[in-house]
Length: 217
Image (tube, rainbow, N blue to C red):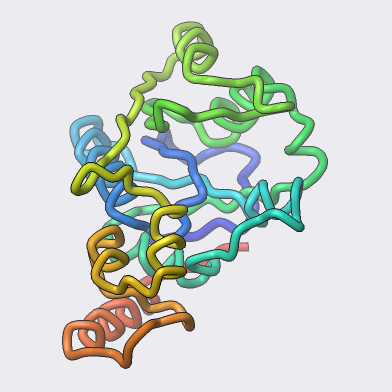
């Protein structure tokens, strides 16, 4: 997997893309990535993720921002392990926070990343004051030459799978619930119990994935 620490001025080829923070790369994220990879293969496009650093909530509301489940390096390793081809890291700053949603589409998605197929959550919001939404994306997609698909919420045992749910499970010291939501053992420093055999195997798998990461400036 190639990682771009800054967005390119233009993409070398069209891409299939999903956008999000992917904190923890939990089962909901994994379902999204599975669909992304399937559609990317159908269109002969690289499967790519666009994420933001820092997390927008850390930039906009630092005091209220939740603790991360994964830092950028851990997130990259997890995304590499599930078969993402490229990870684009967009610096979230005042400029990005105040960028009008239509400009984000035309400049970032179309001009810089050459998106041909885009997958977002059904509650996705973006742009200045979070005014951009799925309907806006679909309107711009028609005139900009790319497709948009919305991913429905993933639930497990009647619970919405989310990074917030994982944090709640950790606060309750419920390792079984955390593992179910993540779809793997939890590997953050806040781990509840010493690594089991399965967890040690997963750690080894992540180290192998990191060896395949190609960091770009």
